[in-house]
Image 1 (cartoon, rainbow, N blue to C red):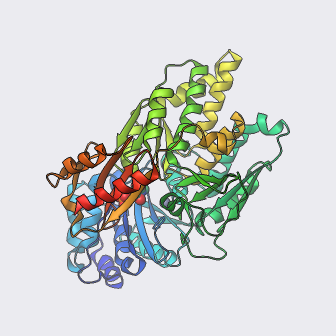
Image 2 (image 1 turned 90 degrees about the vertical axis):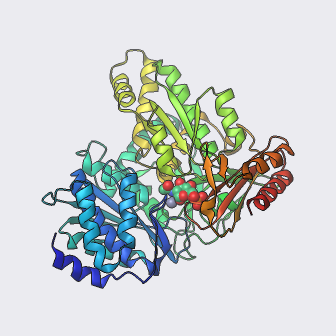
Image 3 (image 1 turned 135 degrees about the horizontal axis):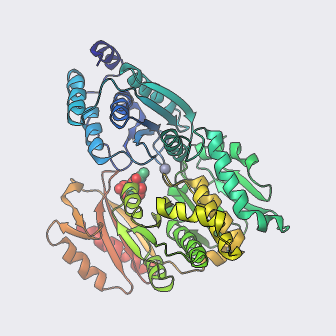
Length: 529
Ligand code: 16G
Ligand code: ZN
């Protein structure tokens, strides 16, 4: 390691005294003006990870749905997945090291992970549209160069685009071309192929209103639009030309407030959706004729997609196993519908994409979604090979067609991570193929009324959970108290968990009426104190 270079650059990216940060479920995230040293150090760490894996590593500068003043950074592993847990610890250690210890921490990581210093390193970098992102990504580059790594800066991209690009770089182009244009080409070709029969049947154009949270999604949709069929007409709102990122808009706002974002004009029954600030989440919604708002969240997206895939699997007649992965936040009605009506196995994991992703890898086809709209579909290698072979060689016309559609889904869905653009195109394709209106889709099942609350406590870590965060094991007595409260209401359920991204405890409750869900949530919040 070139000590001089590291020391020289480190001094330019000094750590504020006393600042301690943690690499959480979504990397580091805090006020942008506290992050310069973290960015520099994540540049250093990415080089070590790249040397160790002998692969290209991604560094994304974004704070997703957080306010515009915040920022964050996360590393992307070779196949486009989240950073491995042991390296999350290295990240935390390195970010919090005092200036004079940075070199020792790097040496320790190299030692523990058997990093070959002679190995070349390649880092690719992306960023969202926050005013602070450009400068912070420059600090990442300083870190990469201080350790002699090479880099390519893709500039403004969505988080899922950078995941896609990392995967392409490390699979010799098998996953697609490692350019943003390659991403548009791959997805749009799959979308056109999947929908061409229906669209060429003279279907009039289908309009979709999209709230882009004043973020990167708008820029990228504008670039992609001319690759897509004219019949799909996208109307962008909160496109970044005015308004603050994520302010009273975006997927997180719509999901948590269960109301329309600011800045969108809707007529009754118009199909709308919202992206979050880095375009890895999506939720749909509409207002009915009486002006009531209807949210179609990640659970309903998962249900639509898995029903569609299950039908196709039945048609191809192969014994491929499909499973759905959710978290404790999944609406009880969705789990019941999937298990009892659709007969699809459902699994529950802890909150955070990496947990769902990991579980979904156990199936031939694993559909995972968080209720907040983050999700995708994973196809095992065996399933993918089988499907591609059937699409080419199957003699039975009906079976071959179903296999070809599955093949298009494989190419349309971003298997590296949840992707608002890719998920949106898959949903739009399914709706057009099945001839479903947004109301019909919404009517598949009725959500149980639910409420989420935040509770401020002195130390959220006193709460410890088990059973995929559905039960509290600590503090003693809390779970019994929750059980007693839940018994008072029909069709009810409640849980508490410490947030992984904010210094709060989260409370979730559902029940037979909104009034009861609200009451139960409040009562559980009081039990937390
Ligand atoms: C992060 C997670 C998201 C999860 C959320 C929960 C990733 C990429 N993002 O944003 O999946 O829903 O945290 O936040 O894993 P919480 O722990 O504060 O409730
Ligand atoms: Zn996001």
